[in-house]
Image (cartoon, rainbow, N blue to C red; front, side):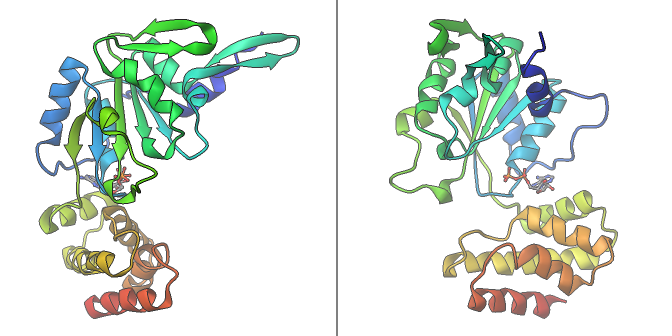
Length: 276
Ligand code: ADP
């Protein structure tokens, strides 16, 4: 009988490879905090705005610690069954298929629930017993509890800017995690990140790009839902490397994906034109 979980597993598990760790420049003491939490297998919450390096940080840490990483991008339809698993009909048989959380718990991977607050609230019920001394995963549909592998670790990300009164993690859930705060890096570090990530060899271009990004970030308080991220600056530098003019690259990476509002588009374009 074919194993229905095989294909899915290949998609979600990043196994440590022999090569270099994914490029990551630390902002503060996040590496030390994560290492300490890992040594005690404490669950971790990565807090910060989108595109500031949370996922890259975790990929870097998983590689450095030689641990497999299972990433689940949470969305509003994601239920506890999507995480834990479900019975599937195969021909005349019903077979149980482990979800990504169960596979991580069994094999001792780091399980990353990206933007957990987006998922249905029933998902927090299954993660609670994994985050305390029990380290157990309840499989309600099989009336079982699974003890977590000693190398299992739970990591969630949380964007404080996104939450509303209706959609937020309960304090009782949050306080089960060790919190690591992320933000957009300071100017000097952001230049190093953009240069390192894009391979852009022109320090003056990187300097202008980062300066423009920081000015654009200030528009967050004037109607922009998302601020210009470090990711957007890396994309812009990459597009320049691919041959686009600085203004076109910056527009494509830092303006159009961010807003449809004509006044904000104009304000962002003015910032870019003032720098290039
Ligand atoms: P988040 O998970 O916070 O939304 P990502 O980790 O996906 O953000 O970061 C977006 C991109 O920004 C990364 O793919 C990488 O190119 C770049 N980046 C951001 N911060 C760093 C950093 N400290 N070191 C290296 N690259 C970074």
